[in-house]
Length: 457
Image 1 (cartoon, rainbow, N blue to C red):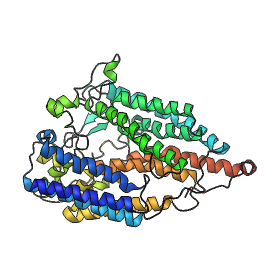
Image 2: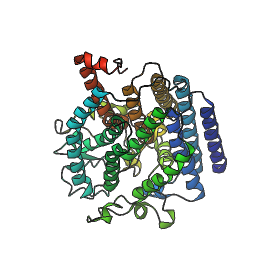
Image 3: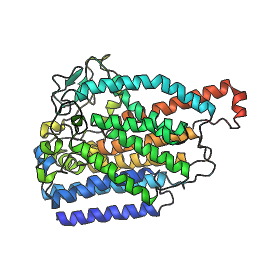
Image 4: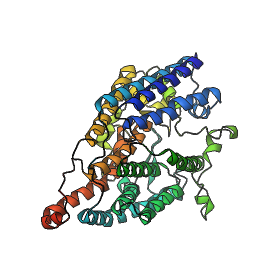
């Protein structure tokens, strides 16, 4: 039964991928591409490894072993989610990519706006980088031992760590370094020396043992380079450059302290390969093991929990932005919690994924509604991008926001998309606002530049 389910899983993925590639709107700018890549890793490759190679490290961690029926039902949930997202995103985002008359140069006022934004945000971002190193680089935060980390507390009910005495708006301000480093490349018109800040940012994030900021910045830079060149897809020879990136991504994932231990600092926690899996399963890590987590959710909800969450988990969008310094008793997670997955297994540090979020919300109807809504909204954003008259800032905003959807697919939480999207979009929106003000205050200079003022939308 499992072998048949896996075969159907591969067939559904291939059919959806073929339909996407045959669609007139197919390109590296379409959100369906990123969901297909996520689905391939999490719900096609991963279950194959689980079944054929015995990857069971995550199930042992959660204290859970699915029955064949749950295994196959999980595959079905993932496939239904893929079809719903693909159909909605292709219908809502049916726009043919076109690069004619697209603006791809910062003028003098744009560069001045970027200089002001960098001068204002860079000190805050660097201060956040120092705080993040103090909290996560010198203490065993990732191994779960937060007793010695100043400003960090662990919530016993959920297992989540929260800030105390400080705020994530400062500690996580280092995320601004990703879009700022990419904007530096654009402002300098893609000259070779403009990539130096970007490389410094990549080195810092890898030294810290964090990879998602690097992924977001790399995808944003790739999209902008493709748009500047007027190409829908990267060249085939560019695929060779992806291999060392994947190798580095995997290496840092297996050992978060890999770069720090090359220097003078000691190790803060054991390599993940020795923590979660036997040596023969070096690749059995939590990265993209969302199939395992989805199986846990499908098995536990609602059989063990007694109810669905009724989409109440998304109420965190309204409470999360309030700093805990101003609201000491702020609830961890959603203010309304109908059940806790950790009461039915060890789900600490695991992500529910977008299909898991839909199932947890309302079962099969929840999967259809969640994935169709996400696909339609992202498809509309794709159609918006290709309308005539879009300014350079519209392209910058789209390229900054689209990579953040990977976090939505993986975490299954709107708050994750809002959090990463906020940091990625803030410098772009600030540059657009300042450039608009400069143009309105200096109409003569703008006319000399020979360009028409363009509204962001």
